[in-house]
Image (cartoon, rainbow, N blue to C red; front, side, top):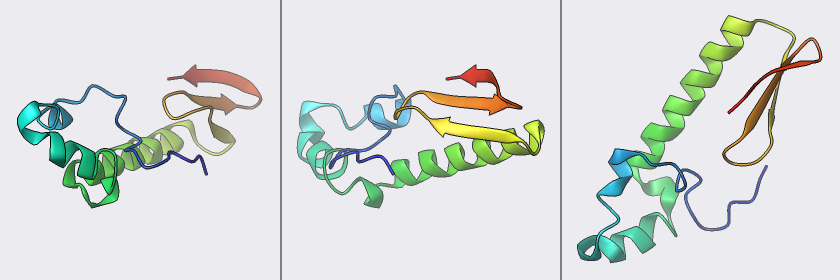
Length: 88
């Protein structure tokens, strides 16, 4: 598993649900959750569930023989029968 340090693995995505934390008024909350205990954040849990559902739907759509490889936190490579079909 990739080591993300102590920051949220969804931090580099521009999701409107996270943007409320990036203000001076909520800076302490941002450090506590986004750069600390992100697993306790409800937005993190929502994003994680959404990603898992999306991956499950893709695997059902592509069927068996699909290999998924996480290149890094933001790039995923999907291959089918040895051919790369998607990287996003």
